[in-house]
Length: 189
Image 1 (cartoon, rainbow, N blue to C red):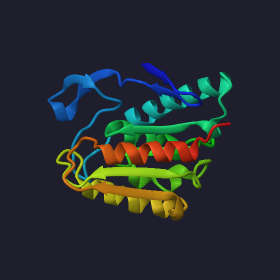
Image 2 (image 1 turned 45 degrees about the vertical axis):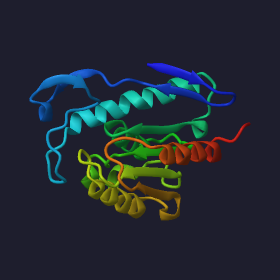
Image 3 (image 1 turned 45 degrees about the horizontal axis):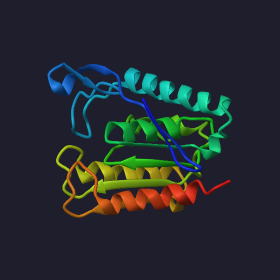
Image 4 (image 1 turned 120 degrees about the horizontal axis):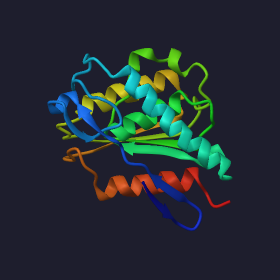
């Protein structure tokens, strides 16, 4: 896990554990949970997703114990990490500062809005970013996720930005958008 500090923001970048992934012919790779398929109707690793979310919630709890108020914490990630960030934030009882969801989808989407019934984050700001040419997590997944988020959260707080020609990667405009989001959600104390 890498930790990066800037004048008023602490970045914690946990790494996914190495585990066999069904989609990868059961070969071990960094993964927060098993991925069985890449279609909207693919079976999902319910137990693995929920356990991974609990692990991230434990990191949040540790930061709160260290003196960081939960409303000064942004969850974010790319691809599977973004998916985990969305699920974790939407099922958390701790009020967060925001969610960064990059090139991802909402796991266990059919469990919502019920799964978010006790969430403290229905009003939290979300920046969702997606490349329009993503072959791994198609833009359709991003669009479906954005629609679902707007149906279970305050739609005015959900921002979905797309980037022409961008595959399953990042670009300078996306990084600028992320920087602006962080600066807005976490102004200096």
